[in-house]
Image 1 (cartoon, rainbow, N blue to C red):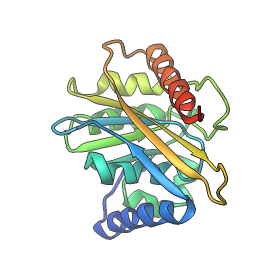
Image 2: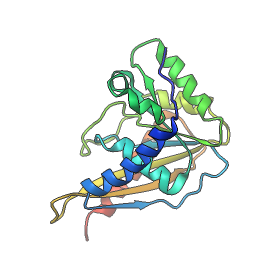
Image 3: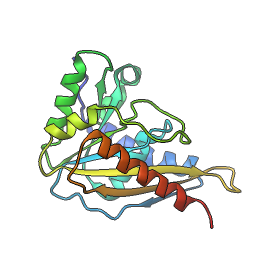
Image 4: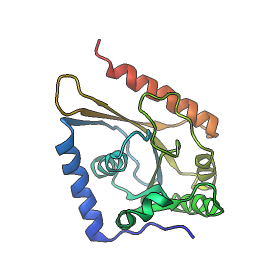
Length: 205
């Protein structure tokens, strides 16, 4: 059986606090570019999985701009060793097991509620920020197929840069994926185009 998300108020407040202060303490500056509104629609947030900080970046993004009930998919072995994360919205997926179907169905079900957002990292594992193209696993396509017709899909890219500082700055850009085509190939291609654009914009002229 999968580990389903819970939302214990104390832990929700704690992770909101930790996301804000942890990012502030460990990064020289954190800049979000997000000009979307997800009011009245369930939200699937897709990001690049490059660091231990990824879930906290998504949590902070939600607190600042999206204001949804936070859910995030984690590998079961990682969640089992950090089970307190389950109390703030994390749920499990176990790759290569029968329970994958249950997890994908559960995730689609969450995305029928306009108050919910789900964060997924379709690469499946943390990979180097320099590795391109980003390759998506097929589960994302199945999640979307079972989700609400009102589903909003957002891409985000988070990029660190040190320049002349001791601590890196963190730059997070968000766009809505609006194309009608939602196959894994279309999503992957669109995400990689957005990633390349973000990297290009990051390089000083």
